[in-house]
Image 1 (cartoon, rainbow, N blue to C red):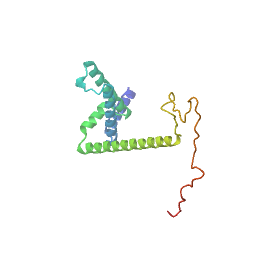
Image 2 (image 1 turned 45 degrees about the vertical axis):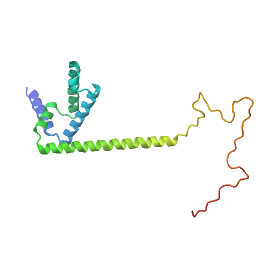
Image 3 (image 1 turned 135 degrees about the horizontal axis):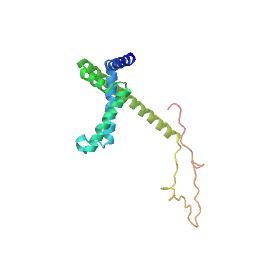
Image 4 (image 1 turned 30 degrees about the horizontal axis):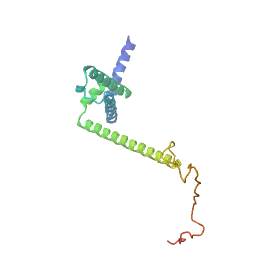
Length: 178
């Protein structure tokens, strides 16, 4: 009889401790995760406002939203009731600390996103530099361009010279001081 009672007291104490141990950073992270979940669910429902949804859609939306919020709280090890109690009992200073923590998290996420985008751009540039250019004759492979009378009956190919003719002098040499 005493073992279940002690276990019950320990569990109640643990749940109260988790509500009291919420830091502004943890509360800010929970809020951000819940906002992301809300955005994901709203997008899945066509970005409609709940007023624009049918009764069944609205029920599904709110059910999915509540489930997502529970998952977020479970991920952080906090119960829904404890988090709501913590949010209700926060004073102005705690609310300001939580808002600052949210701003820091947002800035960090933006910096991480910018860094990731920069790395992707560098990878694309590197890949573009490593590729050899594709030389295509004509508009496409089905319609190649015929050069120098190529493929015409009774014509002989015109010789194509490369470089300067041997009897003409090249450009004047440049001095290294220029």
